[in-house]
Image: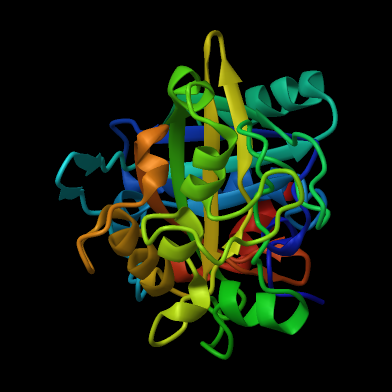
Length: 313
């Protein structure tokens, strides 16, 4: 049976809901009890419908050592700023019916209270169908074209051979990007393609794209060592605002951090042209615990497998 929460490697769903939680004043006993109840929901289908991701603050409160888990650090360069907005816990809900996700959100709130309180909900969705089978960003460009596949995806996204409680886990970077559609629509089609480094019409990479093109900034194979991550991003919308919920899974944060530092211009001074039409308004790091015999494995956080079994009783 797989040690990986199914949502990590599964395709992007039709609908997604990102539910963020903060710690309320509570002792560690209450926090552990809330997490034990959470496992009962996450175990409904092995992590396919509910992906559980733990923030550094929650791990620290429990006195847990998760090697490699740390807070996102603010990044700045000329005209570009990437904020840090940490959360104690993130549940990525996945499905096909928003009503079902609303009810599931309420069940999560009830399970986690009073130790954790919901602070933000972002509703997202799959948009379109690109030439390579991936969904599209709201700009119309296919998202996830260079995702590794098969064993390469597993190697990029999952911590392997790390021992009980860690093997099968994954590190998750989450950013909410807000698009400036007026700026994007004011560009010519050629300028848009050069900004992205691909033609929107057929997704072909442009050899004559400038150094600032997003494809060149984020080309995973161009780093030493290569910086492969598994992207599972989804467009989001709320009222008149919309953009992309960027999600990247990795066996560590190293690859994502290398890519983002280059995008911001901290590697060679070239800022990713994508910042001209979009900007991150939140950034946070999480650790996605592994599974054990179909159950969420929180042993690294100090919860035994029996704790989750008792919560299911």
